[in-house]
Every structure is written in structure tokens, then in C-alpha cells.
Image (cartoon, rainbow, N blue to C red):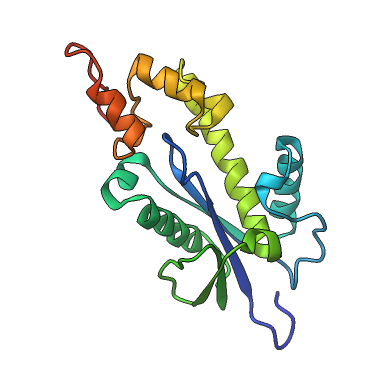
Length: 204
């Protein structure tokens, strides 16, 4: 619950915008009051994988409500990565079982929400609810990419999580795109164009 005179605030953040493969994942988190009951909240990138998992468990236990939203590779290709990220945030909002009065969003852009919203650059470092959202989104997406490693072996998804590392680019050039790759991203499109005529990408 929010304290008297204070709005019920949901923090929003997304993970995976810079990846070549996989979904963009967003989370929305409503914390009790100012989030002081969860010391150590910060941007997910500042935490080790183990600490992120620990914090995610605490957030899920402590939060008034949380929701996860996603937009898949085909939606990213159709809409562009910014619009797909905003769509994932809208879906995270829809997954909340408590209605917020205000949404605070990391970055420069706000999704269309039924409540008032405000974008905050660097919010994942300064706003506890946004920090919590960044952690939940990162943990959820990392787990999804570990599963992807088993579905599409050879790309190293469990290691690089879809980001454009040297090993990922090498695997992409060797194997061609998987159904999880974003064809609208230049390195992926280039690898598809370079495939031999007999080798084609599996359909989505």
C-alpha cells in the first residue's frame, strides 16, 4: 500500500534492447512506500548474476505487485526496438494485479499507460522501484536465454544472452540466424545474406 498522501508508484524498465536475439523483456514493480525495505537496490548491470537472483527473490517476496511483459523477435522486426520495448512495458503494466497511480520509466520515453507516467534518465540507479524492475527483467530474460541455448545449441545463448559479443557474431556467421534472431538488426541481416543458397533460416 502507498502511504497517505503519496501515490502508488510502479517502476518500469526493460532489458535486451541491444541484443541480436531473443525478446525484449520489461518489468513493472510496485514497492511498499519508498522501497527502503529493500536495501541494495540498484541497476541490474551493477550486480553479479548471483546477487541479481537473490535480489529478484526478495523483490518478488516484498513487492506489492509486479508484472512481466515481453515483445518477441518478430514484433521487434515489425515495430522497431523502441516501440517493441514500449509494448513490453505496456504488457508488464497489464500483468500487474494492483493498479498504480503513477508510472516511473527508465529512459527518455514512456509507454502509453492508463495512469500518469514520467520518464527518468538514469532511473534504474536513482529510483528504487525502477531498480527493482530492472533486476526482475534481467533475471527473467537471462533465464529465457538459458532455455534458448537448449532449443538452439551452438550460438552460446546461455553465455552472452543474445548480446553482440565476438563469439555470438562468429556463431551467427557460421550457422546463420536462428528463429530467435532479429532480422532487422544489421549483423543478423548481413549473416542471412551471406548464407549459401542451399542454407536457409528456419521459419519463425
